[in-house]
Amino acid sequence: MKKYDIHRFSLVLALVCAGLTGCDSLVSGAVDSGPSYWSEILKTEPSFKVRLQAAVLLGRSGHPDALKALIDCAKNDKNPAVRRAAIDALAQLKRPRAIVELISLAASDDDPMIAAGAKLALGSFDLVAQQEFVLAAFDSDDVRVRAAVLSHLPLPLNDLAHTVITKSFGDYPEVYEQAQILLATMPRMHRMQWITQGLNSSEPQIRAGAVRALGRDGDRANVAVVIQIFEKDDEDLVVKDAAGSALKELKEHLVEGDFIRDATEHSETHMRMRAIRVLEAIGGRKAARTLVLALADEEAPVRGRAAMALAELEVIAVLPKLEEMVGKPLNEPIKLHLTQAAQRLRAAMVTEQ
Image (tube, rainbow, N blue to C red; front, side, top):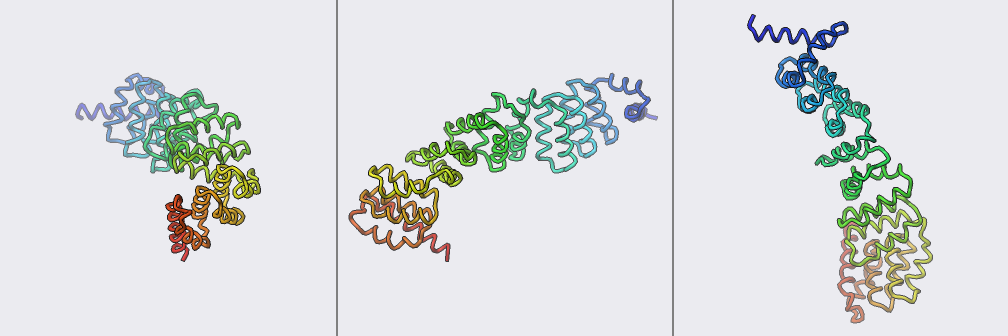
């Protein structure tokens, strides 16, 4: 028998016995060979049974040098059983760095057995004490992984979570929704601190997500904040749209009659404009009727704002009125607004037909 064959036979025998009870001396001898030796076996041995047992031994070793080999095996070995053994070994090894890879595997691996094993393995870690490693996985380009990070984040959140939560406000819907689920588990005072941080972001998408979160929070105190954002002329359109949606969610806290009255009767122009914006967000027949009345306001900006609100609400019946208004010299300052509103209503009419 060749020297290599004799060595390989001894190796297989040791590994097989290592997996059986009553072979403690062989297990000890196998582990004593060192993680670098078994790591190499894990990469190069043709027999999946030998690789599987090598993964088991590396997990039992408790040696930090076993971490890289087990992660590589869990991600890349061609045999699912070996990959699962490597995942179980990572759970036994309990090195926090493995959390990043386990979250990725749990969220994105195509093999259900691997994904389930990784999720199970995460349960063996103290994710509160090792939260920084959970957060580290958020750097992934995979939406599923970023969402999984938020689903595995334990409370209380540490300071390192600020960046992740803030980014999630502007992320894809899957990530955003998971962030909202996490925020809903917090006391409202803490939840509002996170939302306020998003509102102060320099990125419009993040601010928009934070504004939508105000609507989902549903508290009466949020109405004034959302209206203030909705009224900002220099605010990004995506944020204003989010404020409109948030107002609809907060509708039960809005006294519709006050805004209906203010839209046509308030003595201050800016207050009539404010009421029109809110009515646009609220929508409905009463709001539409009031907006039609506002087309006759003495101030051109109010008439223009009312026209744009009616177009947003797709009140097609008002189209002839807008076309008539476009040709009047009195409306020259708002001719562009009236024209754009009429165009939107024509487009809506075609779509409806």
